[in-house]
Image 1 (cartoon, rainbow, N blue to C red):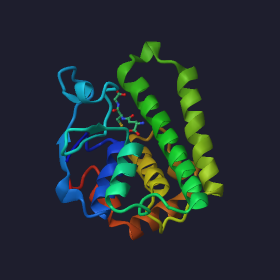
Image 2 (tube, rainbow, N blue to C red):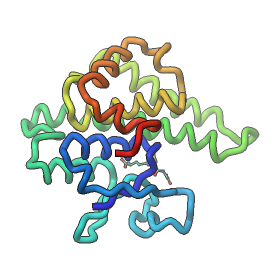
Image 3 (tube, protein in one colour):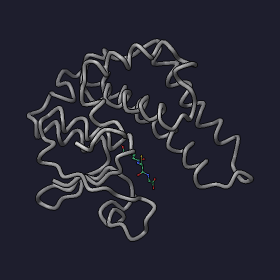
Image 4 (cartoon, protein in one colour):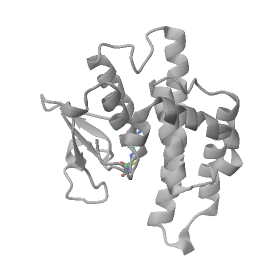
Length: 203
Ligand SMILES: N[C@@H](CCC(=O)N[C@@H](CS)C(=O)NCC(=O)O)C(=O)O
């Protein structure tokens, strides 16, 4: 299989972490993608032009990260990344939506700063997005999944915090210090997190 992603994408990191945990990393070749390059095949393989994208051995293109994780879970026999029990599954998927949604807002803040010159940047739009980030993090200080778990919800939240640590859309460590022990506990329980950090060698 071929995984198209950048090594900095937090969504791509979810897949790289999961493939390590599931012992599938040696079956997935990671090929860097540049979503800003109009000649990159990524736009042909995924009309949205986004990473991550997984190309299966039969040529099927699958996206987005949630579907890829569901696929990997299926290949692993099911019930590994996504709980089988309906109540647990629903809770896990909502945590995944929250982690991914905050990540989406983080990406939009970064793109506003990257693609728009200072003079036409919208403070209102940036506030709108950082509001989502703050509300998401605030919610997680009160209700969060067990960091000892390794499911799609926990993976998403960890990648989201890792992305915030790097891009610093806001300083979550000073605004929401209650989440620091959560990420530390996950980091200690899941070596896949450090192994997929930007400065770690690609797995
Ligand atoms: N919902 C998507 C989000 C993926 C996403 O936003 N990826 C970013 C990189 S972190 C991207 O490809 N951006 C390029 C673009 O929006 O054109 C997923 O879960 O895979």
